[in-house]
Length: 213
Image 1 (tube, rainbow, N blue to C red):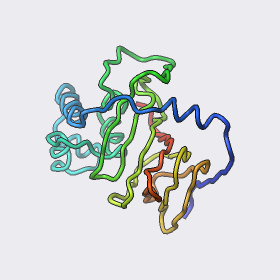
Image 2: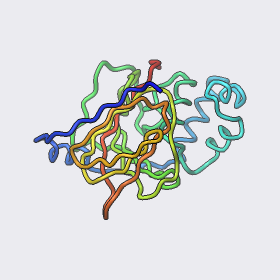
Image 3: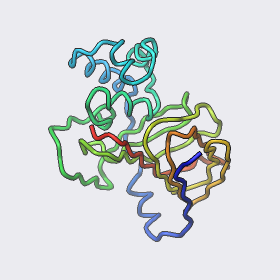
């Protein structure tokens, strides 16, 4: 089995400032995400069956997503967004994005949407929702304390533990990562992570998609 997997451990002075930068300011209604998926699909005249074929999911699963009050995992939304020809940030953001931008600046006082996915074992916060057409998706992730879902999808991932400790399973291996540790890996290998200790960990995660939407 060939895969790219890199660890790094070092102290970075800007860590505390980055905590402040990523402070939670608002909560997003998960049903809005699913409603946006359905509206996009209908506006593009794509049937449930066609979207299922494009994403590799079943028709029933797509239908359940569109009618659920709970948003699916990031990896699922990423596949759906690619199939619909939009950036995943368009689906996640509550803010209207007028068009492609070469860059975006997110100030520490700017509101960022938080999606609470207790049934999938994490919360995540989108950091660059207004940047359209990007290959990378940056988030702040708050893993739960119990394994509930194992992820496997196209692309690559990088994450840096900002706070706390996580236990991470990658394929058949298990790793413990603490504050200041980071990891880079191919996402097609099954993987999952949980928080360890008394408090949830806080992780910067960047997902890279091979195909630009």
